[in-house]
Amino acid sequence: MARTGAARPRVLRRVEPSTVAWLAALAALLFLVAVPVAKVVISSFQDTDTGAFTWNNYAVAYGHVRDYASLGTSLLYAAEVTVASIIIAVPIAWGVARTDMPCKGLVRAFVLGAFITPPYLGAIGWILLAGPNAGWINKVWMAVTGDAHGFVNVYSFGGLVVVTALYAFPYIFVFTADALERVSSEMEEAARILGAGHLRTILRVTLPLVTPAILGGAIVVFLDTVALFGTPAIIALPARIKVMTLVLWQFFEFPVRAEAAAAYAVPLVLITVTLFAAQRAILGRRGYVALTGKGGSRTLLQLGRWRWAIFGYAMLMVALSVLLPYAALAHAAFSRAWGRGFSLANLTLDNFKYLLLTDPAARLTIVHSFGYSAATACLAVALALCVAYIVSRRLVRHTAVLTALCMAPLVIPGIVLAIGFYSAWAPPPLALYGTAALLVFGFTARFLPIAYTNCMASLRSLNPEMEEAVRILGGSQLRAVTRVVVPLLKTSLIGSWLLVFIPATRELSTAIFLVGSNTRVISVMMLDLSENGSFETLAALGFFLLGVTILIVLAGYKLLGRDFMLRRS
Image (cartoon, rainbow, N blue to C red):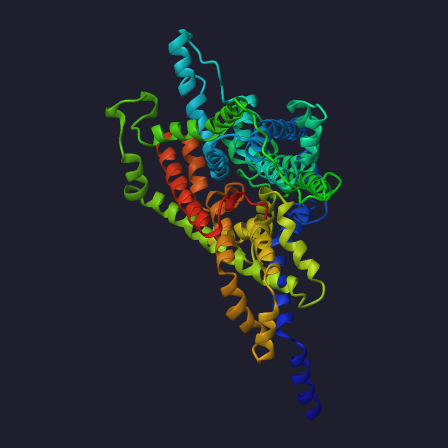
């Protein structure tokens, strides 16, 4: 007995706090990431009733030609959006980063506006602008020309592509502008000295130098588009255009066929993993970096009168993505009926009054959205900081496992992750479906990579000597973290919190599968209002969400500096 009592303290002493933290972080990541992803794959081969192995789910998911057609339509849709985004973004990035284009700060601000606008809200704005007969643009056209019908139709494949690209191009803008600001302009100057014109220099020197960045951004846009739910649900569904995300949603209509949905989602995971690996390979190349011995000087190209042409192009694009949709949404938000046009008699604040004062369900939805998003940001940042600290300080072995699990949601589309959460944690024994916990956990997994990359970058810039001093003076590792690391990284942690909170407030792809009757959030409410044709209330809700988002972005701007939302963290 004495020997057993002596052995027990020795065993306990071997379990260091860092090991406990590693095990706790690993358990949390298994719950949030590994189990839901594994459940998607496993349930795709399980019989709905018996749980036995079967290929029948794949037969159900891909048993008709239309199912393959939806997959092809999704890939074509993503490819065309990517091309359109490149056409929009690259000239604007070149003008901002390499030329004397005027009002660069204004252009950047509007690009940020497009970035923070939920794509489905932009789609609503374009329905108000380019609806077949009632949209502003078509009304003006019919009034001027006398035609009985408008000339643009947002409810078409082309309309779907253009509207999506108008809110996807900021990704390529960020990658390209960042690369152009880093690369020296000496090779371009040498080309011009040797007689090359501006256009030839751009095509033969400038663009090849930043091709990896453009391709990297293009892959991000492709991945985001192929998994997009909101814009297709608002535009493609009424237009009878079938894409993968809408098919996945239909599997969750009564009766729910989660196993068939999992089978349909597996190829989407394979596509995203392959393209993400390609993006990493492209961005990992260094053959396109210009190395010189003069410190990499950058000289802005003097465009003369053409600088106003590139500025006009930039303003046209941001007008299409921000100014016109916002104007249409503002008109609808302050109108009794948006179809009546502009008149003082049509102006009202009743739509905002209804949301904020009259309807308790709407108020509860708003409270839910911001409450769940705040809880998501706190949980994601706390877990990310814990994992990043263990990894950056090399406290235990096998930290690569933690990193892989934290970053895995990058390559797992949100809609697939949501299906995994539904399959893993909605049924008994946990039975979390319809609870706030399931939504918060789903959002946390979705945005964990954002928090992790920011926490990791912050910790790498922090010298560990002060933490070591605390340990030398007898303090614990936990005390070193709480008294040294967290206070020193306070600003960075607030920034990470904001970068998770903002997208969580507008997340739809995850929420649509996990929301219950008592846990509805703003994004789902907007989709419901769109289906009901309540554009006035929808626009008011969208404007409220945008107003809160802009205030948060301004707070982040003050804390973290220019374009904190557009950093390549």
